Image (tube, rainbow, N blue to C red; front, side, top):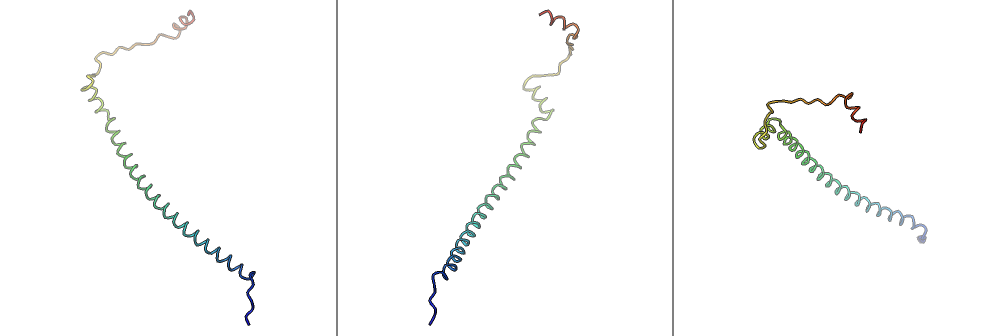
Amino acid sequence: MPSPVSAKSLTLPLWLGLLTMLMALAVVYVKHENRLLTTEIERLRSEHDRLEMEWSQLQLEEAALAHHARIETLARSQLGMSEPRDYVVVEPPHKSLAAPLEGGR
């Protein structure tokens, strides 16, 4: 005659079975999150590469637009600017002469 199985002898295997099921669910969840994050990082890397390329193109465009010869040509043609023919150099008054004027105010 087999011995009767007590409730105490079944609690440990039941707890271990429940714990195993919970761990299996946790593994599935972590794998799912990992796949989502891998997809997101790939999308962000693609966007980073696109932005890097756009930045390089903008730097080239800025260099071309800021080229001295281009600015000078635009200043002459569109604004009618030219080099001055005569230069007049004006020097500020000396400090020794400006001091008495400031004190008299």
